[in-house]
Amino acid sequence: MTLPDWLTIARVVTAFILLILLQACACPPVPAWTAWLALTLFVAAALTDWLDGHLARKWKIESDFGRLFDPLADKLLIAVAFIGLLGAGLLPVWFVSLVVAREFLITGIRLVAGQKGTVLAAEKVGKHKTATQMITAILALLLLAVDPALPAGRILLQIAIILTALITAGSGLYYLARNYSLIISNVRRS
Image (tube, rainbow, N blue to C red; front, side, top):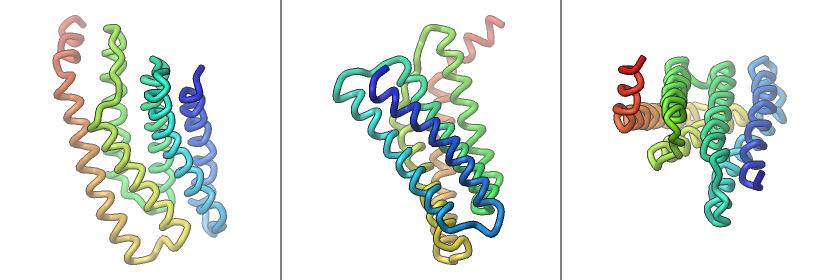
């Protein structure tokens, strides 16, 4: 295992710690340190997403483990953060449902590709989606730490939610269209 692989594993572990912290944040009164710690851990985990890919490319140690588990670690981190923020009342159900549904769709496409011996690496559109989702999570976690009722923060978060929803849906449709023949050929054989 390489350092980038260990960073990916650390992101998975951090997601479970974040889950515990966000559960505590969903039960008022919320201790201020809990929300700040959740924000700090999420930002650190988000930075490892960039760092593991950067190091793997720079040191030329990209691996199938990284190609497969890096996107899964991102999906887990985002899903945990968004579900926790849903529980804290900061994100709408439709938005979290869209994000989770898109992630299941892409994971399904990756599984079909894997059955055919192909590992689908993350593409630029997926990276943009991940970046917008992480920014939205950071904004929501910051709002949770500062003051969830702050009007300016709520407006900014709503804008981020709409932009992220559009990019998330668009990237899902992109992957679906790009891999349509792979999916259809698998269905025809069934």
